[in-house]
Image (cartoon, rainbow, N blue to C red):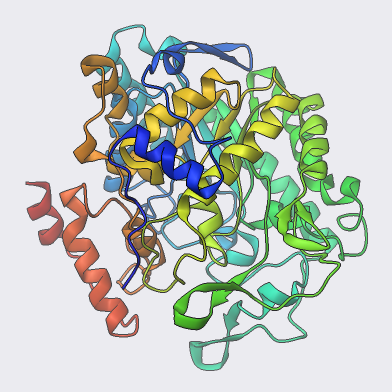
Length: 498
């Protein structure tokens, strides 16, 4: 049984817990939420508050890449909720680069539907917040290639001894086998073609009406793994210049061909750490590794469990010079060390138990983000790690903004659970404690559940959004049967909508 970690009914008890864990230098809480409603300039555009929706994927599009009914529902709820920066979820640039068969995918056939959804999101914002409310709202598109985590087959840019051992590839008879030693790495020419496709997708995204374009460089998808490709030979590996070549080329070409109307952004890992596995009593433990560790980004190569922000800090400066206007900070790999990126109360069904108190993970997010934000005080950055704090996330976000540790606070799981938190905060002066995310990872479990007729269950908040209860039960049933096909039929969905 998972341990209960959250024992902090009051802000005072949270701060006392932080002191006991030795992280009170970075974890603080402010009763006054006013700093969160101060405007901030992003890429020359003023946005009306310092609260953002992270690109939390719903895995609920169609097989053709178009947004589905549940996608529309989520986006419209985010639009009405009141955050002034909606960082849209990952949208694949190629079908072969999708993380799952229901991930959004930008192509000529999906542009019109995507554009209608973006406009519907703005309409919901205007209806909730006034006729001119969209003047200080930004909506972005996260362009991605899933690389190693592409659902059809892994498309890797480097051999990574620890990750390769945990990576499954298609085998004989339609099954999955461990990655063999001769599994191919994407060639330099492959990467040049992918660069071209990023540019093509960026042009389509602008047709959809997005305000900014995010080049996804986190969580060990393709561009993130390139940052860690110290051992790759040739122009895309080795030096920092080489490991950032593809990304810098993409930024440069977007700016050259689309001009300054295409605001540039990125969500990027600050720190990868190393892959983990289940150890004694299912507690997470690092997979065996050797030093110097050459397969991660933002790590101390002599102790890769420790961050080293020298390269991330240098690269952020390079991106700033290229015109990147806002940076969303994350860390870790949700497939191999999820406790880094998403401190949780309870792990997903197939994951290990927490090897550390989640508040230590929250503090790690706050501390590293503050180091980078303070290095570039005029470049707005978005912090992560707030959802585990439950009803204290607003107070901690306000404290971080007031202290200059971050310009904008973002929530992902928290927005799944409670998309109206800004509305309640603005209208009532406080959030509803009963609506907040409780970080039990049911949304992540749904993301990983594949056993239905579309090859992927949609993701949402099971404890707080009754729509997803029956879907979760079907998914658990499929999981318990070894991921044999299950179904979520329209009658069940219609029943829940009522």
